[in-house]
Image (cartoon, rainbow, N blue to C red; front, side, top):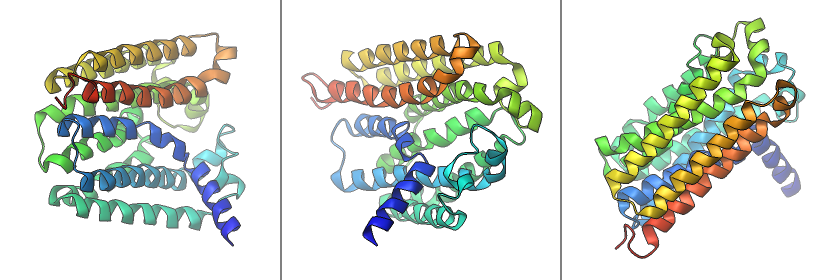
Length: 296
């Protein structure tokens, strides 16, 4: 029974791409370090991390359920766990409900504002799953959904909205939108044939790449403003520079010849960005805890 339980857990984890938690979680840690000057209350840290993990994976499970038919019609996604029967629909429903419950409990343990905002977070997550049906701004809605982890971390520590929270939150929103546009290049023709909306399907490849580049510029600008507002040291800005290099590499891959590019888009849109966020977090840790950092 234990083996079956673990095997089922691995299949559900694979279905919701649990490794993609690495996109927003490290930036939530950066928000945590920034607002607490490197001294976060230990009683709060665990609940923040649990809320971020629960919200992200519950949101992805919900998206898989809502897009079940759409994914079955797309040759690229027809082999996913739900479509092939490796994971049952009821299992994903139960997983989504469990994640929602964990998010609710975590928010309750944090502060009244976080608890009050859970319905808003749920609405943002739910609406995202339908955005590709009616707007090409679906990528930026996804970015807003992921960036909620950053804003939520700030609110968990402060209990109120502050202007200084928005640069990093906006940076993460546009970063996610940018690499999601690159990922959507794979489905451009399929989306057009099915009446689905995306920036590549609406505007074409070259304009989509321009919007991606502009989104990455917003990301870098937002992280710089965040560093200035919180008085980060040079280590932090080194992380911004390294992140810019990773994004330039990503854009270079996306610009390659179309026949070879499609094989490398998952690497560009997913693997590189799964590297970017932990690297950015490590540089932020250095800026906080090395001599002369925020803890001084």
